[in-house]
Image 1 (spheres, helix red, strand yellow):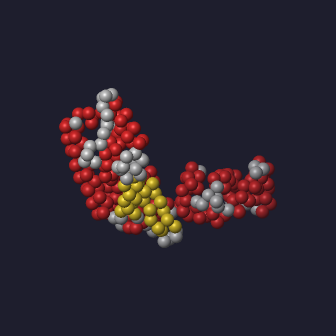
Image 2 (cartoon, rainbow, N blue to C red; image 1 turned 90 degrees about the vertical axis):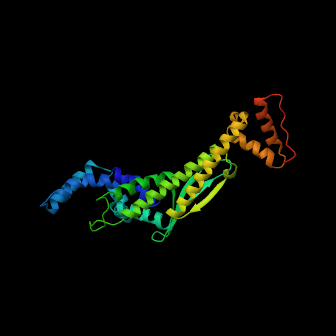
Image 3 (cartoon, rainbow, N blue to C red; image 1 turned 180 degrees about the vertical axis):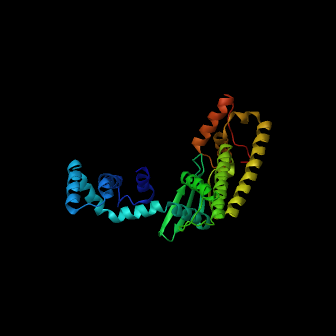
Length: 279
């Protein structure tokens, strides 16, 4: 029953089939299964036993009617659940072959958001996966790629191991990009306050990951040197450093000036913040 109920959420159109429909199907089967397993039944005996079942389960008729009205949706759901392994492999293959990874970091947000999208010709719709869904697919890909873990519809070993491994590699690199972006944000990198990148393929993902890794190493060195030369910088987290950056690089904005003056006063109450002639 758990697998069928989960199947409603994962594979069925909720406008066509609801959990109570699946629950009704299960209850109908439970009620009728003893009768279905009987052999050598005469028509009279069959009708008598059926009548007894209906008497014991007054709602059976309405449940049977509900199942009958949703018979096609129930059949499609059953086929999908039975073929779940093939569906999962198709999703992962599409992700590897035609999927695009999107990395979006808004200026006022602290974290980079990862999504993967692709247009499926078979379903004629766009599939969209957030990082949690991608982690789930990664786990399934690892299971499929294990020796003996992947079979086709005829029970023969299916040679999809390399595709599964490619997806695992892609996701690991994509997650690493997200982690590096978050570190750059935490360290207040001026050039990565906002980030928007779309990437296809393992090689392109790897190039971006390497680029960001170098940017992070360089920025960490810059921050370390700045804090060594200017001790008071150690009092301020990244978002406060960015406020000072805005103060010195943008047109005069009263609210930024007030914030920066408050920050300076926190260290030295007598200090007054002024723009130098170079800005």
